[in-house]
Image 1: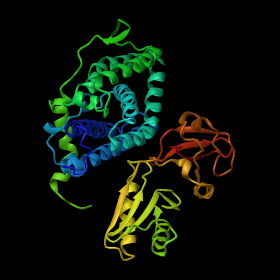
Image 2 (image 1 turned 120 degrees about the vertical axis):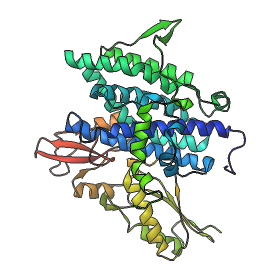
Image 3 (image 1 turned 90 degrees about the vertical axis):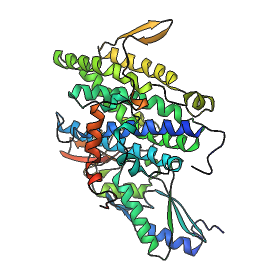
Length: 266
Length: 166
């Protein structure tokens, strides 16, 4: 599609990678926005509304980079695709749940964003490298916030500990789905575009385990040959476009107005 | 031929016009003062404005681009291209002292220098834009817009906003 695309880089793989990141941000942004007006305290209402707006803005950056590779505008990508064409991980599609669940999900996602964007800041694909470096600076605020909440709520009171532990039990196997392999990953690694999900997951686990343990929260994890290994079944499928009714409901909501007046100007 | 820089009268007129367009969320700062305009390039097919967005999810960014197209188009250019750049990324370290003073004049505490080390920048004392006391505390890392956070001044007992270091 793009005429001046660097010939030594795998265009299909880059398209797949960008789409997975764009869909993750778009869907989580919408889930976070469901707290606007409903968060347990006003400060968190403001925080999650801001985070939602940031995430959706970041999806716009990835969709914009996709335009020359797909011929589709960001609006077409976000509003005209069926939910069965989304490649977000299932993790981000789950309903917002308890505030403890939202907090834990955001933290696990923000840690993954940090390792992924840090790695992509050294990508061999220029536009990806520059955008990743830019977004990484903004994401620092998200991680500071979600990590702070996990650290404080993990062992604050008996109730907060119980609810946070229940959230971790639910969210952790889902979160592993963020690192589900994508098509063309070997090519992306070989050409220095992306270090691969195995590497990122390993780095993410090290960070997550130390923060959660510090907050008295337990994870189903074992040390094997010096490496941390999850002892649970990851929730996969999202990257292969296998989704549940949760994503269908969200996409229906998000696209409702657009579908009523396709091409409408506001 | 590509004309760049401000020495050329035609390019200078474009820079001057850009200096009259304000950020809709911070109406005391123009796009030039906000340092979102990186370059103005003129050639036979029109004008290209190189734009470095602040927070990429900020809805004001889309409004600024719209305003650039309208106002520069009104100078007689049929094609106004806006090229977005993230390299180097926009940073609050680009704001000069006069821009920071203007922020203070509308009750927004300006960002500290050194946003590259965010934790250190956030640990610096924040001076109240109203009474200048440093006896202030952060109430929320986020705020009413993506670029601001909420503080409270213990001296004059007033809450205020602070431009987030980025």
